[in-house]
Image 1 (cartoon, one colour):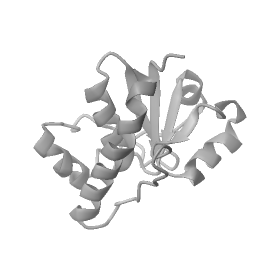
Image 2 (tube, one colour):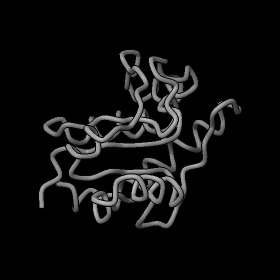
Image 3 (cartoon, one colour):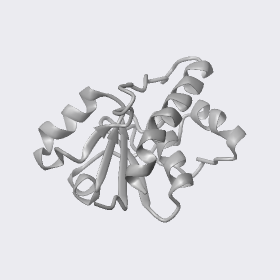
Image 4 (tube, helix red, strand yellow):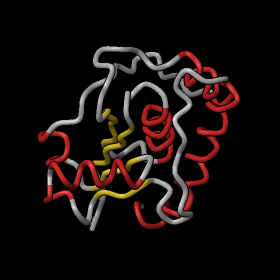
Length: 143
């Protein structure tokens, strides 16, 4: 199974999923990686704090525009990453065919990525680090 289309999901699609999307794009420049929200702040740019915690790694997310998850996105995805078990369940209830390809990004280290929205920059840094740590065990499975 090759995962050429990866979809990363959070709630608003302005904090966590854009960070994960950017980190995955950096690791897999040849794959199609995008992100969306379960309750997206459609049309919004990335949260300034998300951009700030990525800046030291020279990752620019200024082109990001939040979008809502939909049937088309989930159909196209070979692998869907969520930030929590609840989000995985939400997707699988709406699109039962997504069972088996939808996983919490922190699946292997049994970690949820806490939502830093409207919180201190330190929580954005924690989310970024948790996402980095969560991606690590997937690397040999995605490659």
